Structure formats: structure tokens, C-alpha cells
Amino acid sequence: RVWNFGDNINTDLMLPGDVHAGTEEEQAAAVFRANRPGWLKEMRRGDLIIGDRNYGTGSSRLAARSLRNIGIAGLIADSINSLFFRNCVNFGLVALECPGISEAFDELQIAEVSLADFTVKNLATSAVLHAQPVPAHLLDMMQNGGLYPLLEKQGYIAPKAKSVPAPARH
Image (tube, rainbow, N blue to C red; front, side, top):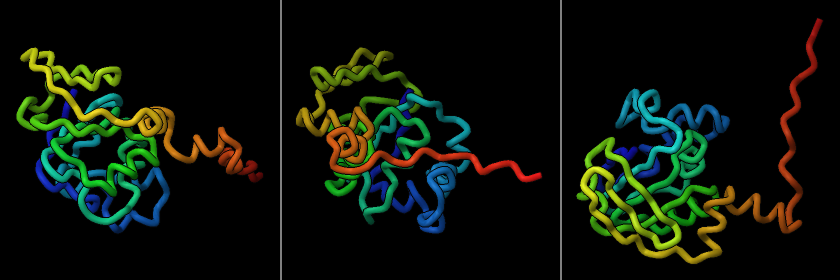
């Protein structure tokens, strides 16, 4: 399912400043609360965000990570701010630029996305659009958790410590 967002969606809307220093869970719970209150209760894991022009403008906050953490399968926009695109790569959120995508879908229509040939099909209308191809090494990072898991796998950084529950107090 797709969710339509407009032009110039900035990172402040995706990740409000008052939770910037919070936990990943707190940040995820605040996604789009300023411009789409209640949206988190409506969206489902695997949904897609459709954006117009200049999606992800603004500061370099961790909005891409928060979108990934809430279960968004990816972002497809007419154009994506270059800094935000790099954050999508770094945090493992599939992001594609696809001219005309914002006009091709109504909210909640179903998209079929092929990363093999970078096509996006609207299952309701049968319209097929062609996204700009993403270089294989960047697509691999987006699909496999981002930069940190890659660096861990290659031995450049230590694996992220697993959370250990605090011992029970009696």
C-alpha cells in the first residue's frame, strides 16, 4: 500500500526535533505526528511512502532510520534530496527516484516494485513507471540494513552490542 506525501517533505516532519536525542523507539513513535497525526496507527509494515519533489529536504537527522524502524518498505519519490538519499543508504531504507510517481498513485493503492529492473507498477491502473537505477553496491546496503551492518560484516567495526535485560530486583 502507498501513502502519498507532498513536495518538500522535510526531515523535521519525519523526525521532530524534540525527540532527536531520544531512543530509537521514541523517535519512531513520533514519525509524522506534526503533519499526519494518527498515521502510525493506520500504516502497516511493508507499506510504501510516495513523495513528490525534493523529498527529505532539511537537516541530516536520523529520519530515514525512523522510517525503517516503523516498518516502511521503502520510499519512492519524484526526486529525493541528496543528503536524505545518502541517509536512506546508510540506514537501510530502500529509496528510489521515479519521475511521475506522485501522479501515478492515489493513496492506499497497491504498488508492485521490482528492484531487478527498477519498475513500479500500480496494480489498480496497470500503469508502469521506471525508476532511476540505483548502483548495485548502494542498493545492497539499502536492502541489508545499511552501512553499519556492512562494516560489521567486513570486520571494520565491532558488532552492535545486544541489549541485555536488567536483572530482576527482589
